[in-house]
Amino acid sequence: MFGMFKLKPNKKYSNITIHTNKLHKLKEALLMNKIPLLNALKQFANKETISLHVPGHKNGKHSFINELGLPNILNYDVTELNGLDDLHYPSEVISEAQKMLAKAYNAEESFFLVNGSTVGNLAAILALCGENDEVLVQRNCHKSIFHGLLLAGAKPIFLPLDIDEELGQPLGVNSEQSMNVIKNYPKAKAIILTNPNYYGMSQSLKNIIELAHSMEIPTIVDEAHGTHFIIGDPFPNDALSMGADIVIQSAHKTLPAMTMGSYLHIKSKLVCKDKVREMLRMLQSSSPSYPIMASLDYARSFVETFSHDKVKILQKKIAEFIKEVNDLSSIQIVTSSRINYTQDLLKVIVKSKKGQTGKQLQEIFENEGIYSELSDWGHVLFILPLDERMDFNDLINRIKKAIESMAYIENKQPKLNIPNFTSTVLHSYADLKKKRKLVKDLADSVGEISAENIVPYPPGIPILLKGELVTTKHVDYIHDVYQYGMTIQNLIEDKNLQIEVLV
Image (cartoon, rainbow, N blue to C red; front, side, top):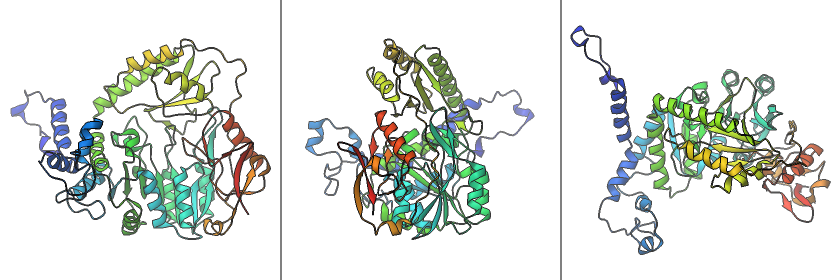
């Protein structure tokens, strides 16, 4: 596309200094102008129109807008008008924007998602899997993966995990053990993996994907936290470059896109694109948000033009920030010591040196206006912006102020040890629909079949899955997580902790 800027060696011009940084800025400016959907919305918003259509705020001109002081983004909140295309049957600016997205990510076809990565996960699963189909699944996938399998009525087969004992967190699949499991299920309809994990730890999936392809099994990768990986070094490899068939990404997590804005990419001979498209039409809103779609268009342009010079500046700033934090007496930054995992530059895991739990440390930071992504038993997770202009001085000053009065915790709680759950769902999800539910005390539920996913949120990774046999390990771990103050979805808090079981 930018071949016009390539200069061939020529003695006539040997004395001319080529300013490559200027050429890059020119290339960047041209790319930033190629934001078709956003530009179309800008042109429409600048028109003097009378809105006699949905939405009810009338292109941001309703009288209540001024009364409430709402931003002008409502000018962009329109519907499928002439020149603004249709997400479900795109042929104009949305089609052009999605083609540019596919080109940026080296996909065969890419889609805007306005209902989050959740809808991408559901669509991918329902396009590939049906009732009683065996599906190989990473055990620490997001709950939306298991919701998709439930809707399909499929039977999940769990792949073994790598557990980081020091962090008390599952990382990814154990590659060698998982490949042995995969070989035993030649009729599996799909393999579903998550990479990176919520904490930014990424592994190579190449060997697993190559094995899957040799067995003609398509691979779905939930890459919610890796939309920015296409930038390249120092970020981990992206899933499409490792051969994944369908990749779902939450653009809103690390790129400047609005909440619920996500991407779905396909690059495969094993996947019917029409089937995925059909599922997206069924599952996505019939009134898709134009501001979300415009932000997705912009996010693609942003990451595509995020230069290596900007990466170097950001990398240097983050390295200095980490060093400064680690020099403090009260907190430290930690990551996994596993050599086969790469830590995402934008994910920073903070731990107290004085015995505070993650929840306590999170509250200490919030007192100085520092709001983190999540806290777990002993850590707080920061997601740093993909922005070389980030003011780290303000952040470090606030951190220092927040922790200056931190005291040692004498009776600190022990480290949370996550079990490596190896149980399976005993029945297909289709069979589970026929059973009824009963509430039981958690302590009395060992040996029963769980009726719901028991999920600490965030990050949304189930401790216990619907259809899984409840074990003592599950019960003990749920109690431990609860004691650390973490929010657990589908856990009933009565006089005693309770869950629903199937009978």
